Length: 89
Image (tube, rainbow, N blue to C red; front, side, top):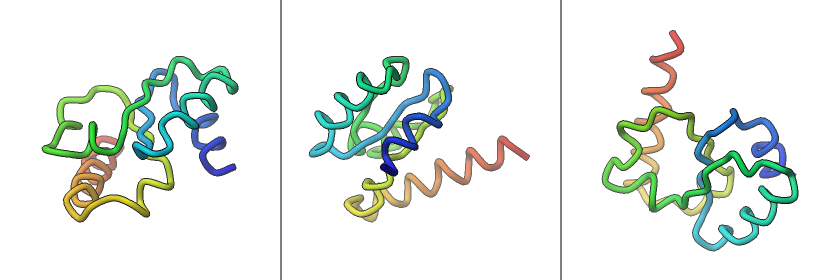
């Protein structure tokens, strides 16, 4: 239910980040909810080696990612969230 709500509330055209294991489930959910505008990426694709930097569209992180992220990925998620918050000020 949390993932469903995150998908429904995601901005149009956002990147939706999920875990590698949940990718097929999330892809099916995106189609069922009619959110084919979202770009599905895995945690490792976006939050490894600063791959998120330079992204101009919002990134929505599935709640399950926080449970499985490595320390490096959590640091990058924190950096992204800090950067995003600074843009909103």
